[in-house]
Length: 207
Image 1: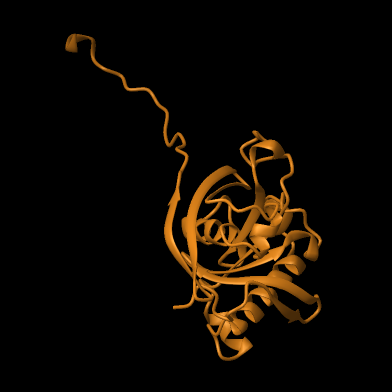
Image 2: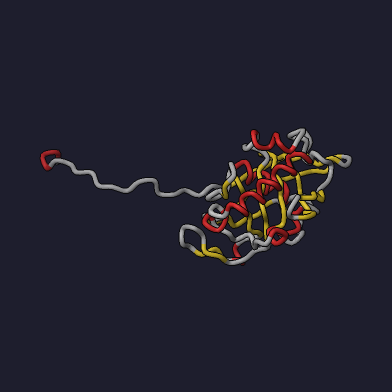
């Protein structure tokens, strides 16, 4: 399977009701459509409540997803997108910006290379799916993609991005073999969170 199904690092997709959008269509980890946040009126620091309660925004993002799926050859007609909700994903990216994550903690612009928000099953994901993180890292490692450009266009094998819940660092190495990009390595770090706190009562006679 080709890393870039269309053969392009950036495609221009004409979206009804939106217009022409630059998009990176990549199949790494999971098929993903990357677009610039500012191109659809966002800054990339949105949280779930900013997106998931607005039917107009959700419909726009689904239309983008459907037309991206068609361009990637994942569906043959736009109508098929309705029954193929799992893939591709839509993610919008922006330049580093300080914001408050859903956890209440501050994410500083100086600590990240990019901000990314991803849609999953019709809603903004509360953090970032691991498979989409692979796509982010891979796209960031390839000069000329939407993700790479948002991160400053630098060549790097590692990127730290801000998502709704915090940050995630993902690394990737990609080689251009006679005009065809191939991924040779992907790595990521995952944060842990507290799942449960409680009290256990032990009978006094146990001591």
